[in-house]
Image (cartoon, rainbow, N blue to C red; front, side):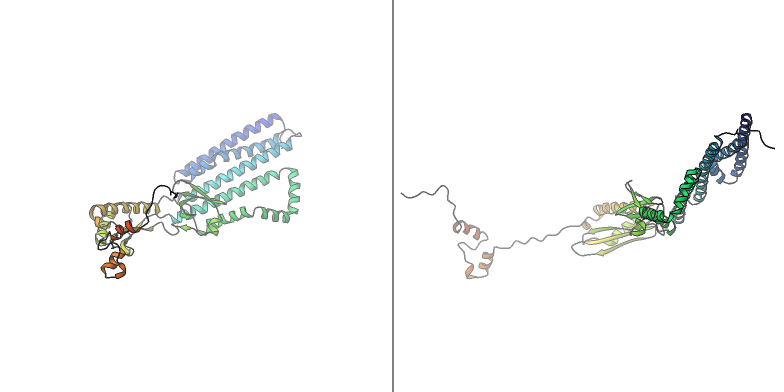
Length: 390
């Protein structure tokens, strides 16, 4: 039975659509809340998709009511096109919300706030890259679908498809660098070469990987600076990854000390120092004399810690404690510069004492003989001007 197209029917249909949308959202919310009592993921779904789902359902039901009951006229195609555009936009919003929900579900099991988090960091990096890629695809498809709702855009699309070969070549040449970074970002995500929260050394700077996108990587430097590098940097240049397999690291503390140092006493003090701190992970503790040339003895201490920041703090702690112990208990070990002073006799006096007949001067027999002789044999300075004879 055909529905009468009147303004009254339109108002009734719109009200029924609103009531139906409220009823459906209430039923869906009740089901999700009941499921949330046993697991956590429904709460994340409600938080991400509640608003776009309600708007999408309301727009679809209103569109159905308007298309059935709206009185005929010239504005009917425009109204349908407007509803179609709004539906596509809200549908893209809903899809993006679902992508974010899937990201939350994937990351809730793998947190990076624990010591052994290599697998969690790898999965987190891959999920973040996939999320960004999926959202870009959804947005691009939504924009393309909206443009295709216009009749003029369809004709343009046909002509563009006819010359797709030329356009693809031009676009590839123009966006060569951007596309290279995009593919490099995907390679980083799935090659496991670098992950979020990895400790790296890039461009001589120490920092952590803070963010990985499709085109660039953000490194959080130790002094709170951010270094933004293109994704191709990590696929074309060498860099250090201190947490590639695990976060445990080995570090060294070196001292240049005097030859009178006693390594045995230093080794005993090192054991007492490590026993007073929780920075040491109790894996490696070594004190060795690695060099003994150039007037100094080089002592090297090797220790381990659970990660790079802890290792840095441990090295500083050991260095401070050992310096204090050297000044307090072993001052003879403090490095010193030794200089031998030799007071040689003047050359003429030494030759005269040796019996050299050519070494006799005006004065001799004393170290100051040459100095006194110069007072009589050296040039004599005269004061005043020369006076000419008459």
